[in-house]
Structure formats: structure tokens, C-alpha cells
Image (tube, rainbow, N blue to C red; front, top):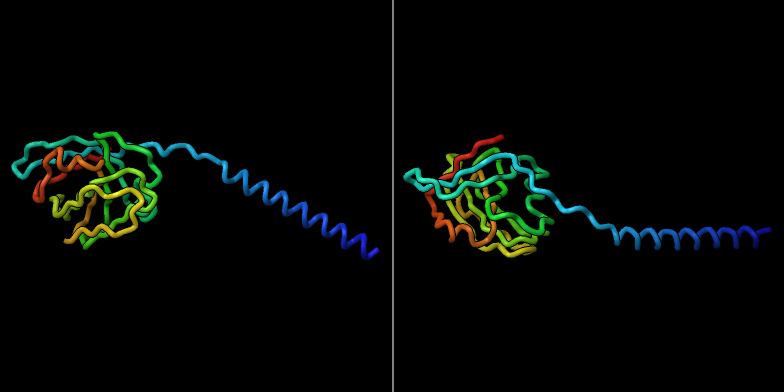
Length: 163
């Protein structure tokens, strides 16, 4: 009787292990849908004199989860789009590119929407901190190379129109 129970227990245990292994392999094969851009505002980058440099559609990251996730896992972003990170107060900021697959330019803005620093060509998946160098309340991420193409500079501004 004891042998039958032991054998049955072994059989159940091995069967569970095989099922778990099969489920684990199936889980690896799950493919998630691409993360879609969600337009939440329009932004205008302007020169210090007021001339518009660029019009953008932006997605807003204004809570902890959205700010931590940012543009992670995105495969691409159109040239006229960006993500604006909004913080409660102005202070030095640090970003990294964990799980971010798109090279980016980071534009740091103060509480008056003026560009206070710029970091160009952040490398995908790089874990090194990208510091603002000065206090910033907002950070705009755009595709790498656009800061140079648009000739953005410290002192230029951002005007935001939320939908």
C-alpha cells in the first residue's frame, strides 16, 4: 500500500513538473501587441523671440507609473511626436534608457517652460543616468537627431495645449 502511494505521489509530482515546464515554454512564446502612441496634447517649440520651430503631438507622462515606463518597449516614434514628462516641482532630473529601443534626444525645461539643458543621442537600453545638470520640471523626449535638425538651444521654449 505504501509503495502504491509513493509511486502515485511521484507520478503526480513528475506530471506537475512537466506541465509547469510546458506552461513556462508557452509563456516565453507570448507576443505582446505594440504600444500605441496616444496623443494627449499638442506642443510648439519656439525660439526666444517667439517664432515657432516645430509643432509636435505629445503623449503625457504625469504619474509615477507613466514616468517610470516612458517610451520603453516602443519600436519607433514618428518625427512629429514626443513624450512630455511632467513633474510636480523643479529639481535636478536623471533619466536612463532601460528597455527603451529608440535613440532619443532629451530636452529639459524649467517651471516656465524654457529649455535649460539638452542631452542628445541617448543610446537605447543604456543604464547610465542622463542628468539634467540643472533643475527641471519638464522633460521632452524626441527622436535622436531632431534637436540638431531643429536647431534647438537653451533659452528656447515649449508651449503646451492639452486636448
